[in-house]
Every structure is written in C-alpha cells, then in structure tokens.
Image (cartoon, rainbow, N blue to C red):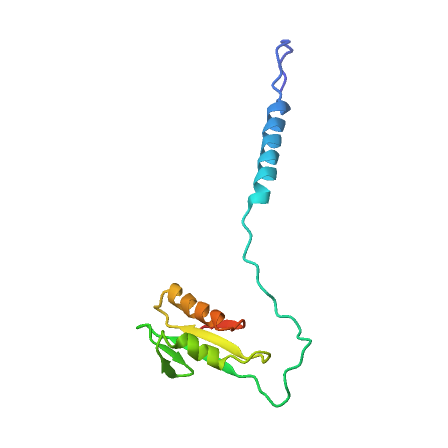
Length: 132
C-alpha cells in the first residue's frame, strides 16, 4: 500500500554483483572440468579374426591363492618360486586359454596382483579375476 510519495529511494536489486558472482563460478567450473579424474581405460573384447587350430580346445586354468598365501593351479599345490616355470609350461601361444585368479576373502590385493604379474611375465595376456 502506497501511503504517500516521499520522493525517497526505491529498493531495487542490484544485478551487477550477482552477474559478477555468476561469471566467477563459470570460470571456476571451466578451469576445474579438464582436471576431473577419469576412470581407468579398459580393454574391451574384440572379435578375433584368426581361428585357433581345429584339433586343440581352449582350457580354463584357475589359480587359487589361500589365506596362508598357498597357491594352487587347478587344485594342485604349487610353490611361489615354481609358479613362473609352471605357468610358462602351461602357456600355449596362439590358443585362447583363459587364466583366472581367485583370492581368499581376507587376502590382501597386493598378493593377488603379484600372482597376476607372474602370470603376465610368463606370457599370459588374458587374465581374469574370480569372485565367490
């Protein structure tokens, strides 16, 4: 209700500080966006153009690492020192064998990665992790 015209100032919202804040926020987001971390690159399965030999079947090999750091290949105990030679003997180039690593629930991930590194050094490039 307007009781009288006193000639005083009217209350208005000053838009200039709001626009300044908005521009500063836009600049901050433009600077931060390129540095946002991205996920790991994953190799997706590709269709194979080469065919494996007809008389050779692919096989699945499971390496189990127990709580006490005991290692088994397809339920056969293997010593950690003998693991590289054993995996190198099982590796067949040109044949799509699958190697799976299964670790105990309470095992540290570093010990599973150590087994995976040994397998990769023996020539295996298709290594999967098994869950329970």
